Image (cartoon, rainbow, N blue to C red):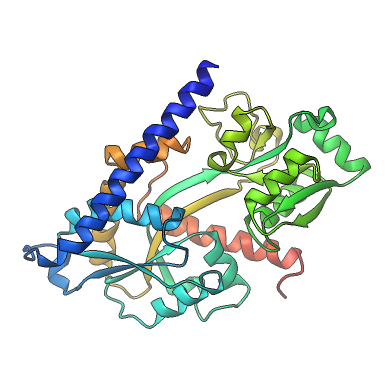
Length: 338
């Protein structure tokens, strides 16, 4: 009971922190253009304003994270920042728009796994080599979760054993999405046998697990927390190499000898060809902003470690390219690309 209350308090605190930052962001966006540009900063490059291009709906996770990041980054770079929505095509519109912009660091694209899948499936004009990752905002591991009442699947060992007799019905948000690719990758490493059912969203997959329509799904902790705390579902494995402090009893895939990481990431990139000094300046400003206490509390509310979740260009660009390669391989294995 104490642990549940602690987690709920963290989420409540995180909610108010997010609300405060979004309000600050909106106010800052409205009046930042009136500030005089200061010497010796990114502002001298002539951005008016810096655009952070998102592919998702306003008010969603990508939008909220971008606005929170922008509050302090704006101060660090001494320049106006505006979040610009280019929605559609699972990131294709945002990618194609970014490709039309100058390689001067004035246009920064927000990235999630959806962008990687869109590129790998050739649904936009952008290629992974067109980008340089400048900063990672968050890396959230994913669980495999089951109905807590299903004793046949109550541990990862039972889960894997049962899958050999009859494939596990796994709910996914979409064909070729994070859950689908994650499930395929884990099955390849562990020998598990899955049958996928697409529901259109992670929330619908979760409800299907609770109702018993399917047996499992793949979710990140922030999506699963309420149902875990309510005793409806049980995480049986964390698809990562490190345990999470809020879920110390949940084994990792690596501890089972299955070296698979399935993560939900949010980060930022600029076009390749952007001058290196500008890339470094953006990266340092963003990481500094995301180490700020209020952004850190937002991460803690999602059970993430603010000391390790944000990362600079060296770490993020390498991870971005590695994640793309893994996604492309999985999509090919699933028969979704040639």
